[in-house]
Image (cartoon, rainbow, N blue to C red; front, side):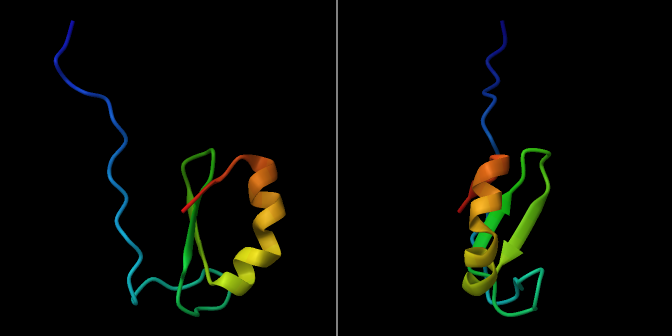
Length: 61
């Protein structure tokens, strides 16, 4: 048995340098896809895609 903990790495907070993947506005939401990829969204584009992100099981923070 190992003494190594298997916890997920801590997420870094979004900064002013993080931009929406759709329009390059300031990112306010990070969606982590079930495959491990990440998408960053401004609130406008997050609202447009929220239903689909929930449907596919993305983790949003």
